[in-house]
Length: 381
Ligand SMILES: *Cc1c(COP(=O)(O)O)cnc(C)c1O
Image 1 (cartoon, rainbow, N blue to C red):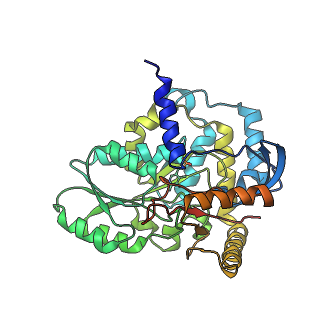
Image 2 (image 1 turned 180 degrees about the horizontal axis):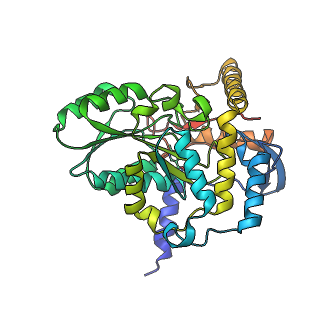
Image 3 (image 1 turned 45 degrees about the vertical axis):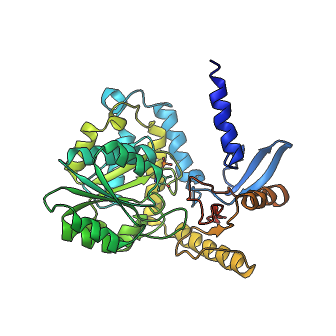
């Protein structure tokens, strides 16, 4: 048997469906955000990145770089072990305190990525609730879907942001069964926001626990950058906040924040936390510097919102199909995979603008089977 044939056939299927992905080889230039060098097939070329998740450029903020360099110089490159086996370094402990404070919770727990925090966090929490039912928004991120799947408990999917549907499902579940509602604060493909308070009303009425993903909103919205739940005055009603250190905070890592007991239980039971090496101290110190900066500085958030509004206005004035959104996400619906790819190729080749087409399965296929959504997100310069 020639095993490689299975893999080449799998790749051929992706090419056939125009879903084969090519990554741009980029070199970001610290101090010139969002400029970068694109190592193109024809050699290096200057480009401007229009689709970065390092929304506020914190990844190259002098305070953040300074903390990273200073800490690496003092403490070395790696953590040296799992949290249990000598990996709990002091900057990591400080980072968790900073995160607990950011989200107004008793405690926080850091993971190696936002993906891992959802995958292992949701699964562990649900498994610790006897006979739990999970209620998940239909457009949840893949990391949450995997977390729900790994929980191995009964799940009910509610139509995206549809609180009436959520209520029907909650009402249909036995009152004495533990319930966990998992959803995102801000959905990064369409840029829409969850009705957090209305979801919390239902959680209260039906005795459910709430788990919110603030990955695209932490650092970006709310007082001190605490996120959408904080902005909407609902933070105290949320049981678990999940976030990343890799988007607005510009570094790497993920976390959950909640009551001391929830956090201690996840720390004690989650395989995706226990059996992997801790984040390096330099990354923890850098993330802490970014969080602390954004807790007191509103300037980056205001400027970013202004830029996003300007992009929407300019694209709309040019007659482009911008989907309305109330956030910094600016989705442009092209609707045809070929044209979408063509447009982004042209922007890169002719104008030095790097924007990634967003394809199925990141977004659903459209009603006529060919819609692609792509976001021209977040102008940040
Ligand atoms: C990016 C993302 C994650 C994963 O975070 P990483 O730190 O990049 O692993 C989780 N949830 C949502 C909604 C995301 O967009």
